[in-house]
Image 1: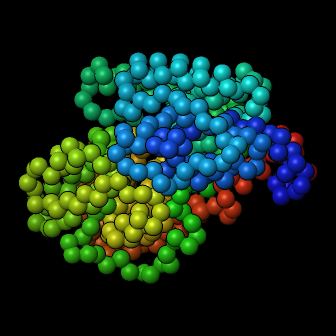
Image 2 (image 1 turned 90 degrees about the vertical axis):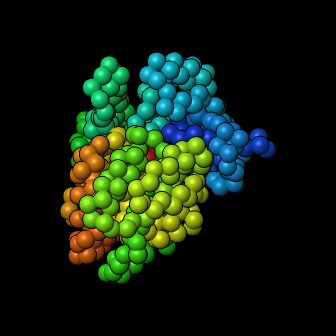
Length: 411
């Protein structure tokens, strides 16, 4: 790929990019926007193109009840189109929002040369449809495998509907991946799966993270001495699908059976009501609630202050916090869902358990707490895995080169 040549630079200056974001924008009180997860990536993409139109769900600072100083979207050639936001919405609501999203995206799609979207949700469907309607190239970022996302819980009509929805979505998204012009793929196993497809081009890509930088990865010390009491870290929302309540049950079971003291650090929501739900049961488990922790040095400090990271999600693609935690030397216990098994080898670079299995989770945590050699091995191997995910150059630079090549600007 010749993405550094002047022909590329000249060609892309007249190119317009339509980008469908995968996470919510924060509408600031001054009328500007911020994005804690993708802000730096979006900002670094904009200089390479004549214009970038970002279509993404949005909410206000007041809804989040937190300031949005980090990762402000500041590029002058960036236009924002707000899409409906449906956290934890019912399926019929998601389908209605899909219709609204499609209409809004198609209204602004004409004239764009490339449509860039992310695998994993309904906006990927909209992005692919928009690219076909306007005759542009479809660029999809694949970071997980939805066919591995299941639904756990009691066997009832709602669970059946969710499972059916996930199966349909997995089939649709797989079809879109195979028919996209450009596939940006994270992970060796996924890349092997898609690299030989006869249609389009596949490129292996590192994870996009606002805290994964070369200088943020510590040297391997060979020591994983535990705090007293040991600190278990959970990063995520207070929701059953994240597995937080499974983790609480597992830790209480572990404490009951071993009489061991433990400290759970929870970084995620700022909801006072949900925080109260975590603390109102007496179990002998010490819980330290951190609330929202901004990406960057503050989050790195949290990772480095804990001993073990638990990612007990019931459904997921490939959680960013998995790579981030491993990059800071944390041994990880995670569920074998989504793209997680593509990154973790059980017993080598982490411990894997089935989702929604409190007993297995408790046993895995006990094992990693009691076995110093295993903990040290997993920490070191996890660091190596994290290093393999660090980009050799900025993600935006890589994507720029891929799009330029696909449009015929490379020489």
